[in-house]
Image (cartoon, rainbow, N blue to C red; front, side, top):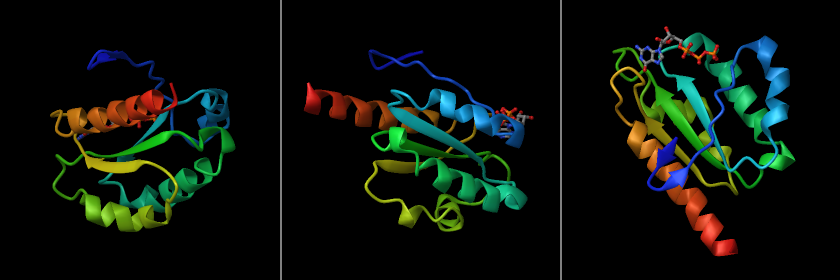
Amino acid sequence: MTFKGYKLNIWDIGGQKTLRPYWRNYYEKTDALIWVVDSADLARLNDCREELHNLLKEERLFGASLLIFANKQDIPSALSVAELEKALDIASISKRHCRIVACSAVDGTGLLEGFEFVVNDISSRIYLFS
Ligand SMILES: Nc1nc2c(ncn2[C@@H]2O[C@H](COP(=O)(O)OP(=O)(O)OP(=O)(O)O)[C@@H](O)[C@H]2O)c(=O)[nH]1
């Protein structure tokens, strides 16, 4: 995908438990993590928080920008960004460029805002070190 003149190579990696051991195959040279949360699925929030915080311990991902998409905002019962920040303990994520953006993959809300954050954050890093 090309966005704002940058070519993005994006891998959609399944979140199911059986697929999680394969996540490690994608850590090398990853510039950004996009963590998509089902904001309407309260039952999986604890698991979601634990997996996210475990993933962030991975040394090879220390430099990666983190975008959290609070997806499914089109569903009336979806948690707000503020509620998700609390449930996922986002405040404890330090030393990392992190943004949480409300979105809906169904109607497209928030997707541009999220990708703009990712691309701006990565590009500012690239220019800083080049
Ligand atoms: N209402 C609504 N439904 C959505 C939205 N995004 C995805 N879905 C639905 O949620 C279901 C699961 O979507 P997937 O894209 O398969 O979810 P996934 O997270 O990629 O699943 P894994 O790859 O197994 O982790 C599908 O029925 C989608 O249509 C959204 O923003 N709003």
